[in-house]
Each structure stands twice: as C-alpha cells, then as structure tokens.
Amino acid sequence: MKNLIVTVAILMTGITQVFAQLPDPGFEIDGVTAIVITDPQNDFLSPNGVTWGVVGESVTANHTVENLETLFKLAEANGIKVFISPHYYYKHDHSWKFEGALETLMHKIHMFDRGDQLATEGFEGSGADFLERYKKYIEKDFVTVVGPHKIYGPEQNDLSLQLRKQKIDKVILAGMSGNLCVEAHMRELIEDGFEVSVVGDATASAIVPGYDGNAAAQTNFRFISSHVYTTEELAKDLEHFKK
Image (cartoon, rainbow, N blue to C red):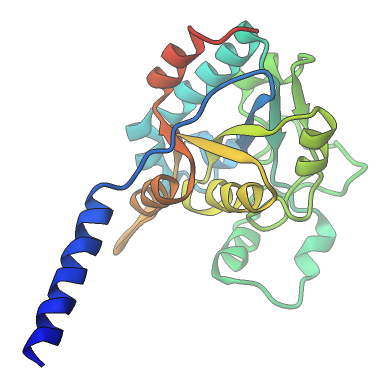
C-alpha cells in the first residue's frame, strides 16, 4: 500500500510538471494563412450595444476595438485575406422551440436582430451592423464576409468552404466573444483540419459576478490553439512575413 501511495505521488508530480511546462507549438505565417474575425459588430463592441454592460470591461481592458482595427491594417499591408463570420438573427430565428441559456438571453435583448435575409432596411447603424470604424476595410477586396453563424460555432455557415476555396490552411483567429463564438470557431476549425492561432487581446468576453468569461477564454486558447499572440507580437511576426 505504501509503495502504491509513493507511485501515485510520483505520477501526480510528473503530471504537475507536464502542465507547468505546457508546450507552445508555435505558428508560422505563410501564403496559406488568413485572419478570421468573429462578430465585429455594434452589439458587442459599441458602448451603445446591448451587451456592453457585461463585455465593456473586458473590451476596454484588452483594447479589443483598437486591436481588431490593427489586424485589418496588418492584413491589408501584408496581403493577407480576412474572413468575417458575423452573427445575425432573423425574424424566423425567434420562433425556435428550445434554446440554451445565452441563446435565450440574446433573443430576449434582441441582439444582432435583422428583419430577414433579403431585407437591409434598418440594418445600417443597428446592433447587428459592423462597427463603423471597420467598414472602410470590410468594403475592400481583401475581406470576405461569410454567411452568419447562428449560435456560436461556424458549423452552420460557409466559413470553412470559403477558406478551402482560397486554399487557406492556417487561421489567425480574433473577435467576439472570446469564450463563446471565438472559442467555438477555434474548436471547429481545428477539428476541420486547420492550423489555428488566436490573438488573445483582439478578443473580449462577458464578465459577470462569479463568472469571468475572459479568463476562461484565454485559458482555453492557450490549451487548444497552436499559439496565442498579442497584437504587438503578431505585428512583429509579420515584419518577417514574405508575401
């Protein structure tokens, strides 16, 4: 029995040491790399957005708005394609018969609401619209806006198809919200065979009493992706990138 206890103690010590030395596989930017940004929309990133009360602290602390704009600038300057996976809810989405906790909340506060797929009336400047400062980049040819994802991940939109059709194998991921849509996109893209890194300070998450979504997201980014960048580190990496 004593030997068993000693053996277990040794094994547990080894496991602790392994986790203390969590590897960083790294990420090499090359010609098959794209940037994917989730939900760069007013309801998340504007002080007038319906979620600002719970995400504003994290957005402000991470300088998310500014860092996302830096990603657009870096992409344009270095010939890197950007793909945006937006989040829209149409009228018919409000007739769903069951929902998870945050789906219920999003529908209740009319987050990302639009009329229908064919209507643009009322979209300009709405919570579902893109942050105004990003539009000058989004309207350019290096940016592709894919179909909307409906809950958190890209399983129901054409993101993977559009990436594959451009022969993209590697993704630098950022956007909102860190522990929900960004993390869900990270997991699905990795499962779909893409090499994925995350720009940790170009994301943000809800922080409410008892729950720190940003801390949860940053932990999982580190555990699951190939590398977690800061925006500053990514800019330095791109200095060595050859178009």
